[in-house]
Length: 443
Ligand SMILES: [Mn+2]
Image (cartoon, rainbow, N blue to C red; front, side, top):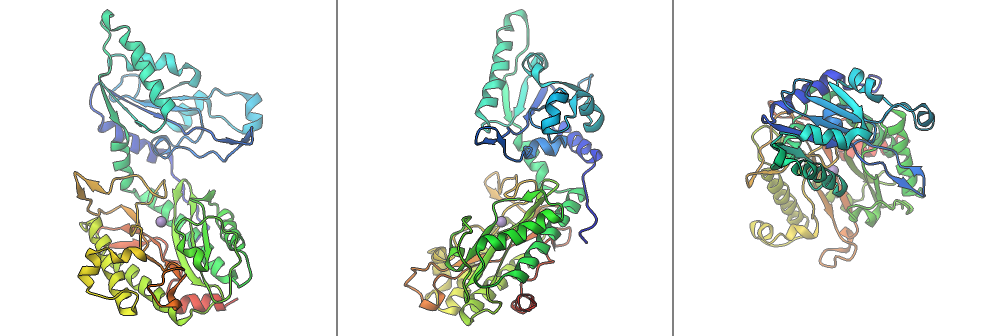
């Protein structure tokens, strides 16, 4: 299953550009910058990771690049500015595509050295009315765009047309990214399978006395081994009450006998994220209290996933999760009172304080708004979202019986909306009590 290694080909990126350019009005220009490089301790590089919007439209993974799109331009609609080939630098940092490579391998109609950017941009902006760019994402780039426009304005008395309208390019690109193509889905299934494999491995090796970071190492080894470049986000491995810290990333405590461990980790494969959370007993056997809360979260997760299909609004799922968790908390005695009143009073918030899920794709919290014109968005075929209800009983919550305190549980899967319903992309990692206990015991 993990042997085939799907990738995106140039036709996929060309099709995206086509679709993007079709949405740009006449007399407009769109500009996207690559991600900046990050350094630490002077000259040590962080792993470079391309900006997701830039990657989505170009497939180009080098830094120091700017992509320009001009609809219906005679010399070509896609112009790439990138690094000039330089053998003395490439021997340190690896291959540069150069301008010839930008045209041949990345489908640019024209390519120029990034050092020519300022001069050429003034030329390309001439006579354009609308400019699309990633507004307010990068202060320096905002200033640079305005600087080009400013240079043009100085020439206005010689009859030069200057841009007068500025739009956020994300309103177009993010909407496109929300619906995944079949090629993207092949990659996301693969990312899901790799991460599922890693979680299974972790369940198998987990034992009392090991450190949280050792369990993290077991997972991240599997990511890398199967070709996932790096974790899609900082892996969370929280034993016992650490599971109640939602973005716990210290991962440096000992995993204790009798506690649960919450593991939220997903690999990034070919730029696409997966995002899985499993919670299981460190010693392989749920206690009665752990099991009761776990089965509640699982029941809610499964019934929420079952609701996923085109036309269902995001807030319907959100309300379902809140209602069913509240109902379960009443049944178990952690909340008392009238169901509807407890929901209206947000009584669940002491135990469940995050959203039920998020879009997933090139980013873990992927692009795309959740509301359109003030209305919650309806699901459509091709969207991918996580479904991740949880319950976290604070160690100092003295309103509930002591047996519940310090238990934190989240169960998260990646779900594709299909024409008729849903497909769980991370189905390969078990989550029923019986399966988990069997897998944990099988060591
Ligand atoms: Mn998530």
